[in-house]
Length: 150
Ligand SMILES: Cc1cc2nc3c(=O)[nH]c(=O)nc-3n(C[C@H](O)[C@H](O)[C@H](O)COP(=O)(O)OP(=O)(O)OC[C@H]3O[C@@H](n4cnc5c(N)ncnc54)[C@H](O)[C@@H]3O)c2cc1C
Image (cartoon, rainbow, N blue to C red; front, side, top):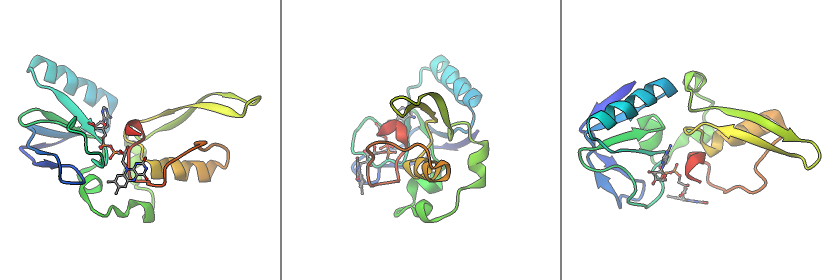
């Protein structure tokens, strides 16, 4: 897992700034599970973020553990150009960038969908267009955020 030591964190609006002890960028569930166990044993608090667009102070803190669900270039580039670039090949190996149909009901034309915590709204939009079958009934305009935070 990629890790950065003592890297400064800023949210999009520059209203939240801190310096976590470690910034991790996980791509496997097993890796993240191990990180959580390590943090528990070392009395560290773990907080995650996606595109860092929100203004909440509920991001990480000084000397704690920060988990960036997006690679740092994607998370910190302003403006983020990912909506006009092709899909990243590295997404295929990222276990947090998954969209899986669970149960579907033809009667009311709805489906339960399991979405990975690093999946962006742009990636969901592309998945919808590719499959031409499922979309969110109501969605926001902005595509640069991870769906877990919406
Ligand atoms: C320029 C701009 C335009 C915007 N336009 C819109 C709009 O049109 N419509 C709209 O609805 N909103 C809009 N917003 C608000 C923003 O996009 C939403 O708040 C969005 O949900 C933020 O997503 P994010 O990926 O940046 O989340 P973040 O800000 O990175 O995270 C949000 C919160 O969730 C927590 N979190 C994130 N990931 C995880 C995880 N995996 N596990 C546990 N906790 C997690 C973080 O700690 C944080 O507290 C806009 C914001 C900006 C800056």
